[in-house]
Image 1 (spheres, rainbow, N blue to C red):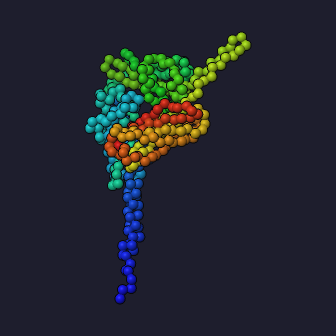
Image 2 (image 1 turned 180 degrees about the vertical axis):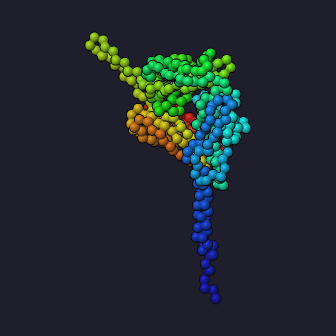
Length: 342
């Protein structure tokens, strides 16, 4: 006797199948989250002199890395424009003649069963040649850090006495970090300009003997301000009003962890309030992507943000990240930093 249609077994199994799928997704997400994450950047110890050996610390990592690998890089004197040094993949690195006048840094990659992630140390001091002179009194900057004024740098004191000197002026963040070379600024004096406002300045002085050289950094100047001039003619005072100040932004660090980018950056603004950061990801043969971030500052502040790396940027290669700050209608200069996607 037929009592009617039998229940469909597949429908009874559907809730169980959905539960299994959900558990699988949760396990996959957990595995992704277990990729090593850097919590304190690697560092370098040792003397920045040809023939000396530098040693990398691994930094601090979460998610229990099982192993570490290393890639040493040679950079410009301000720590920019870094490139891999061939075969320099050990925890230690002995400086060679090709490093003289440059800085070096190390990229540490942590690996566990779920994947790998990389973090980069700060750049070393500028590498001196093997028998380069020794700096005993640092170079010093004198003059007013005001737009339109002229700053001068002393060469400092060296042993033995150098035969010549070279100088490179640098523009730094308001807290004296992140110093970058100023193109063409290689004299003993420097005319302060509007691009320096809200920054500090310093100088790298390189001392040369017959065959050797060494470099020392000066103190930093005061934070540069705009010119304010007050003149009196008979009974009338004429005051030139400073031009509106623009905010500044400097990218301090950039890390790639799993499918996310982690950035640390410093923002300074002339007035307290909200500063909008326009961030853009760019990669060869891929359309750029722009996003907007917002931070609140009193004067200067250091911030960290992270975002999802779009699928079109996940293939191996160099990713360029740029940032520009906007405050009270004023735009900062463009800040940029790149990272290798493995």
